[in-house]
Length: 404
Image (cartoon, rainbow, N blue to C red; front, side):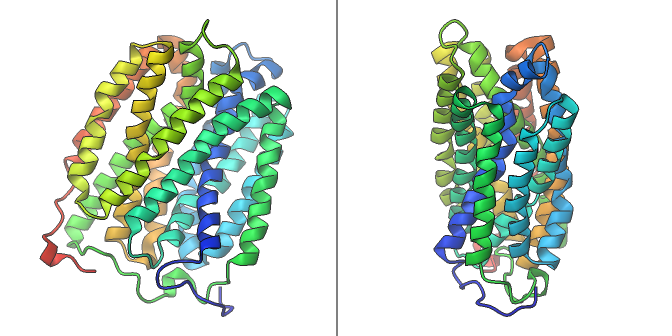
C-alpha cells in the first residue's frame, strides 16, 4: 500500500485497532469450531446416522487453514497487513453465511473449506501486525491467545444456545454478520499503511542467533507446533462430543454441555496470560518443556474418568494445551525481523496446521473404532513426542549476546 497515512505508534497500534485484532483472533477460532459444536444436529438433518460420519467433511477447512497460511503471510509482508485483515473479516463472514445455505455433506465440505482459506489469513498477518513495535511481545501474544481461546469458548456456549433456540444455520449466520461488521469497522479505524512491511526499516529480531542455530530453532519450532496443533485440534474439535459421552445419563441438554465446555475454555484461556508474561522474562526451552510434559499424565487421567471427574480432568488438560500456544509466535518475534515475520509465520503454519488437519479427519473414525479413552491415550503419546522435540531447541545465548 502506498497511500500515506498515520503509521503505527512506536509502542504499537491504537487501542481500537488492537481490540479489533484480538477480536479477529476470537472470530478465527470460533468460526472453525461452530461446526464441531453443531455437528450432531447437522448430521441428523443431512441424514447421517452419527456425528462421526459427518466429522471428516470438515477436514478441508483445517487443511486450507494450514496450506493457505504461506500465501497469506507472503501477501501480508509484500502487499500490506491492513488490507489482508479486511479481507479476513469480510471473507469469514460471507463464508459462514454460505455454510448456512448448504443442504448436503459435500456442499457443507466445500463451504467449510472456503472458510478455512479465509481463516488462514489471521495468524500469519494479524499477530505480526499486533506485535509490531511493542516492547513486551510475550504479554501481547498471551492476551491475544486469551482472545482466541475465548472465541473457542464462545463457539461452545453461543452455538449450543443458537442451535437450541434458532437452529444450526443461524449459528453460522449471526456470527457471520458480526464478522462483516468488524471488517467494515476495521477499514474505517485502521489507517492505510505508508509502506508494506517488507519495505520497512526497523523491527529487528530481539535475539540474534547464528544462521545454523536459527535454522535449528525454526525446524524444532515447526515440528513442535505441528505436534502441538494435533493435540489442539483433537481436543477443541472433539471435546464437545467427549463431554456429551462422559455425561451421558447425567446431562443430556446440548446447551448445558456447551456451557460446561465454555467454562473449561474460558478458565484455561487465562493460562496464556501467565505464560505470555513468563516468556518475556525467562528462556523458552525449560518453560515449554515442562508445559509439554505435564500434558501426558493429565490426558491419561482424562481417559479414565467420567462426568464431573472428566470435567476437572479436561479443564487441567486444556490449561496446558492453551498455555503452550504462545510459544511459537513469541519465538518468531524474538528471532525474526518484522519484515519477514508474516512469511516465516506462514511457512511454519502451513507445515503445522497442514499436518495437524489429519487430527480433524481422524476424530470421527478413530473414536468410532477405538473409543475416546484409547484416543486420549494416543494423544498422551503425542504429548510425550512433543516434549522430546522441545529438548532439541537450542539454548539461547547469554544475556551479553542478546541484541535488543
